[in-house]
Image 1: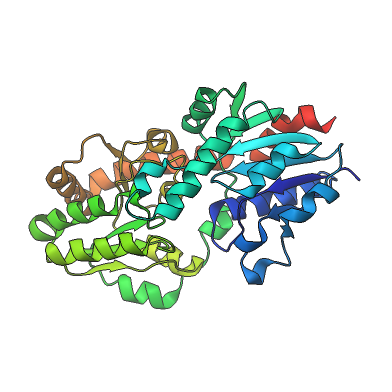
Image 2 (image 1 turned 120 degrees about the vertical axis):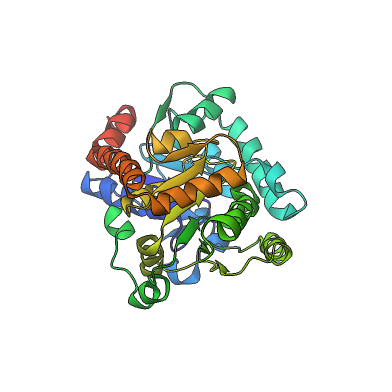
Length: 357
């Protein structure tokens, strides 16, 4: 039986690429192909090692007629092994954050990102099919010399996104106070300090009872987390919670109780939390950087300048002005409906068709 395998740098619970790889594996098997996911063993969570194969086994297990799809997202041995395999190849680019964002914060991550971007330039021409999950990412591939890049947005599991919320979290944060929420990894490119700066104005001048909530892992960026706590203390901000990584039911509760989703990130290759917030009917205010405008596709509220006092005023309007809030939510619902109406499985099969004959 021919196979369509996938290479990922690592595999973990709650990781967007890991979740997508699971979805694609189900599709590939339903098409009648064998399908496995390979990752570096050291980057597979222990409890998931029965679900994913060790990357070191791939050269012996992948045959010339097989197809391997590489999820390119960071510097990894997976990128090197992919380049050397004798098989049919496809590449899906999720973006590699420029290492400059991590200089002085986490040099090891900066080096891994720099390695990834260098590997990405050398992979131009290796795959027969080159995909990117946004036009923003496709443009980056083109700049590196990739030919015929096609856009294939992330295959999201909306049943998981809209999972049953955690009741304890609902009780804690559903107390009627305005909740400003941001979800995303605790990384410098996310510019959490700018979210905090905007919240400073919200709490001091607009909505004194407002609360700030961030959900996202700081694993590997603990120094950045410490700097954020120092910033919070210097501004004398109260009721700001950096929760770290949370399970999906808790995340669903945070979206359910959020008044506004505030994103000040300066580099996004797609930004899944924007889709999640819109799916949960939370009005989005986001800085127009990277793929953010493309992901929102005319929905939400785009901010082109980081005037934190003005952002705070608009957040207040979204919380108090029912007509404005409903107008924003209406556009967001239309965006989510368009996203969910796409047959992404059929789109992917069409993209991979040249490799499947």
